[in-house]
Image (cartoon, rainbow, N blue to C red):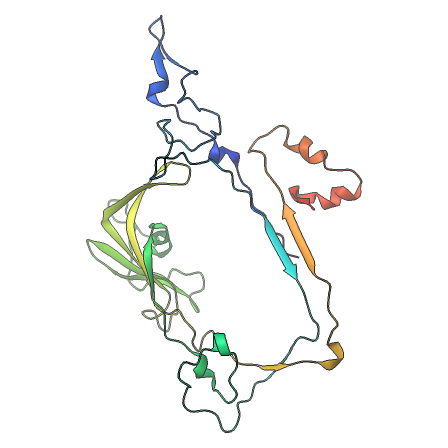
Length: 291
């Protein structure tokens, strides 16, 4: 069984900003907070999403957006048939096919007798998009210039595994930095994910909590998708008759734990309320409630 531990902090959903509209002047001339103002949400998790100014975040149709708290739920199911298959070396037929049938699709038709491995290859798929400049930190050297800006050295491999993985800058000029992440050291230009971060273009947006974000505009491209020699293999599909029908029963595991806050004094008491027997101490170890 695999345990995946994740925490969801309610602080990320709690409003910690006070809009200017909530500040008023009292009879003594002091600026105070008008807690009766409908825009005052400090220390609360509002029912609907609001921005830093206390205004409701609306959809393009002018509707309020429900403020939900995401809870991760992982469900796994395993059915193991001991006689389902056994790995054996695959040997192609002596008379293999030379021409791929028109319209042949292994996803639809499965295995084709006499087909060599390259019949199952498909052309590369190019994927492009936009992202933030977070990966730029992975390709900078340990040096800085006179203005304390990081120095990027072309083709300097900054990966922790330089034998198998290349992370580094391809080129740099006054406008942009081009770099690769996860490329093969023997074929840098045709492998990995390529990024282009522009030095004079910024993207301003908001995260899921309505906080302002700003970063350098970055494009990415990867053109080594699809099926090829690096991710396709053929093996003989065999079964051991003595194991046919001998299966392990299906197992459905669910591990759910809801963290009620960063520093909630009732958290430990709530966990203790789940303990009914001494065996529950082991079941609930590590802060997880298993059902």
